[in-house]
Image (tube, rainbow, N blue to C red):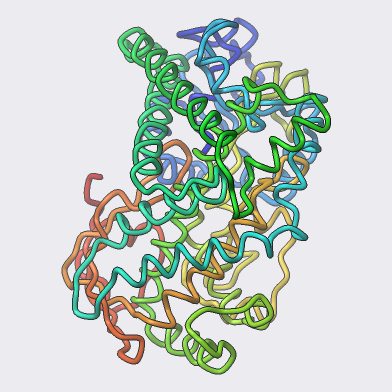
Amino acid sequence: MESLLALANSHGRHKMSHQQRLTLHDFEMPMTRGRLMQFADDPIGCMKQLNRDHGDLAVLAENDQRLVFVFSPELNREVLSNSQVFESRFFAVRGNRNSSQRRVTSGLLSQNGTEHRDARRMMKDAFAKKILPGYHQTICQIACELTDSWHAGDTCDLNAEMVQFMLKMTAALLFGVDDAAFAYRLGALIDSWVHRNHEIGMGALVSSPQFAEGYDDLLRQAEELEQSVQEMFQSHRSSEHDRLNILSLLFQVQQSQGQLTDNQLTGHATLLFAAAHLTTAHTFSWTLFLLSQHPEVLQKLQAELRAKVAGDIPTLAELDGLAYLDAVIKESMRVLPASSYSQRVAVEPTSLGPVHLNPGTPVIFSQYITHHRSDIYVNADRFIPERWATITPSAYEYLPFGAGPRMCIGAPLAMAEIRTALTIMLKRFNFQIQPMSTINGHVISTMLGPTSTIPATLLPCGSLPESVPVYGSVHNLVQLPDATRIGAIPIAA
């Protein structure tokens, strides 16, 4: 979920520090001179071009400003394993010290150094693998509520269905809230706030009137968001909760250790909700789309589900035996990773290859580009789950949840949600994409998700869908079967 708004944190509102001025040495670097907004407008297209032009290391420069890109597992490791030199800068606009914006941006994702290590230690038990069985009932219940609302022959927008599903799921697992209206309201508020942060952050990175025009609105949104989260805290404390949820576990840490204030919890809860629901929703949407366009993969997966899952709801033991399901999920997150890129900022003088980095230099790494390297993955642009029977990529070759000491703390829970809910969905339904639909994907705030509807007809699980022709920019992101290609023309999102 990280975005370009992070890249400007130490550079003032409109331009980079004087330390970022280019020197004669810069002209010896793998550099492209252009507009930084090229990256903001089309991150994947820009990174593909930089990778083609310069290889594993590239610089995009505009006047005195530059962005450094790393595209190899070795450079991923160098940046992601060294959190003392390369820090996270999640939000460019933090607001003043006593503002709501400062508090709601003060969660785990924004912290560094000792503060980050201490916060992660306090929160780790809520996301530990040993506690995942406690979330299983909630995951199954919400997934079954979704499939109970579906009927064979109906049409739906898979993108919208998965976003709403994950809003309910995240509200239940994170806050213990079984209230769809609250989940949708909070999700809409957080999504709007995240997008506003992204727009304002870009205005801070490159001279733009967006910064001045949107700053006051951002602060007002942060105040509304903080109030909603704190009201939810009060309601949570005054209610009985018979289901395990993350907030209850964090309240226990607060009471037993006394190191978590409500202001800190507000920041953690806000950013966890923001980071969790859309990335996982996008993974569901892309996976169901890919399966519908690869019926031979879907047929093999459903054969495994029939053979190894006795009922409509999988047990934990049954889920552990679904090797092909795991391969399908891994492959979906490889070719269409919900987190397409992320970034760090150098906080001391350092170098990456021939490129010298002054403090404040933004460094961008890309899950999407790494996952599409042909020297790591044969036929890298194609969706081939069978590859996972014979490959074991390193943590820096395959990194859908990041890597290193800042790897996503919620990765085990996200995988449990995806594995369980996909099984429940596919035990009852298949999805026929409507022919001639326009399926667009674009990066917003680092997240690669559908930016169009994904219209589908619900089929009973015994009826396989067919690969059908579709328009849209999805063809530029993944190589789909020949039957799907009718004008693989980028359509504006």
